Image (cartoon, rainbow, N blue to C red; front, side, top):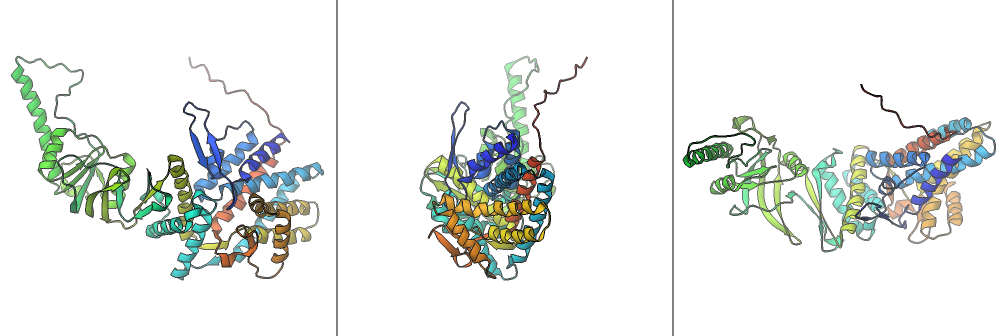
Length: 507
């Protein structure tokens, strides 16, 4: 029983963050800095929990996987798994064997998935409709997060960013830069690419039709740097000669780089003042110490490759963009590349009152971006607001009535667990969940019903009219992972602490 209780405690912890009226949690780390994170994202909360109970760790894992796989629905997964276990516990007390319960759950999950498949809407052909679907999904995803006040604005940002990806789920080329100051409404999407660096001294501030060489090489050898080696010289003038030779080496390297015919050189390592001077004389913009992620992205965006040797210019792919200039955001100067080769890339600049707000905004936006990029690939869409759960519950109930034997109890329990999601949404909004869910169930017995819980007005509303939709992929992932996790915990009958592995004495 201990395994059940731990898992249910975890589920109850994140339960209150579910839905549009869900509350946030403050996570305070026990480390030195006592750092504080304010978040609504199920996966973030569970990741940072300190858990002793082994069964609870299974739940933490499924929420993590859900986060990596589809990005959203992390809370729903845990709540559903917790409810499945709660129902299972009642059944075990009624002397039904866990294996029976598991096979019942299996049947129920299959049935629920088939129902969802029948009810999906797919608007891939009609571009306009599909875009409005994406907008709806983005709004629904964001409405349970901190961004819910400006969700129109952010939904638009997210949809634009994802539409530029043209169907790849690689979110690398969407860069999110957080700058404190301003309000969340001041966030914007930038077509180009922004590098968080200042432009060096005495260099051109704007370059049109830039040819960019992205490199990862040391540009700091104009002084004698012979570590641990002894050089015996007869006189001071010889030292000067050595230094001169080093300088010549550097000058040659710079000459080689300039021979590529570039006007912007971005390096990952530092550039000394001597080569920088040479670059400035040649009218080349040299940027040093660009962080690695920035550089890789920049390579992606401008269509260049990261080079480290410069002997044969023809084999190096240069990056191109129309304009490089310096812009100010808040009080920081950034370098802005616009008109890039790859139209996919863009930068989202988030503004906000404090770091906590920004971190949370980034997490929420990341959720929305993940879901949207998945939806662009798998364009099936469902209604939201507890509608899919009610549909599944209804069908699963039908199945329970048709199934003979003890399994039917388990199947019925599964449908009760599904109903717990709309119930929780209503509870978090402080509504009378029992009455609302009963009303919903009655509504769902009519054909082609689109009713769900409308938290704002506090009654049963029409989800199709309100434009609340969710991605099919998210729902499916929630359903399957929750069932599997519950099944795994159900199979356990005893928790044994084992001795740590002894290291063999290597003699």
